[in-house]
Image 1 (spheres, rainbow, N blue to C red):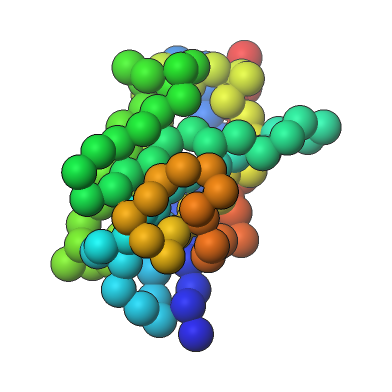
Image 2 (cartoon, rainbow, N blue to C red):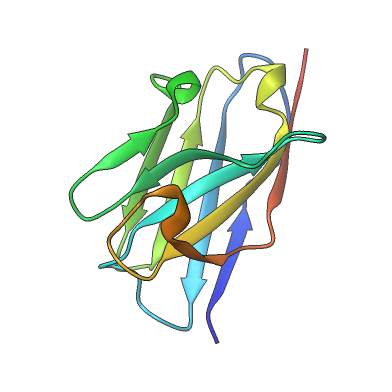
Amino acid sequence: QVRLVESGGGLVQAGGSLRLSCAASGRTFSNSGMGWFRQAPGKERERVAAISRSRTYYADSMKGRFTISRDNAKNTIYLQMNSLKPEDTAVYYCAASLSDSILPHAFYYWGQGTQVTVSS
């Protein structure tokens, strides 16, 4: 059974940093696209960042502030979030693709999410 378990969320002041982790189990994702999405109350889920074997993707508002990385040996991905803003407040979800694709529709497995709250 595949599981994606996020950790590292919490409450932080604006301008602060958090590092999210997503540990995968049940299968190896070293050849799969993986990513982070978020959903704020009343808003649609949006793709924050994603990583494949050869490239990374960032939403425009995250470029220069967020960094996605992966440790294939640990079957884990990370999201380093710096210069956080109140508008970054959301539930952050980890997701994994069945292939190397990181297009939004390619993600098949999902974690339960971790809350990130940025106070002003």
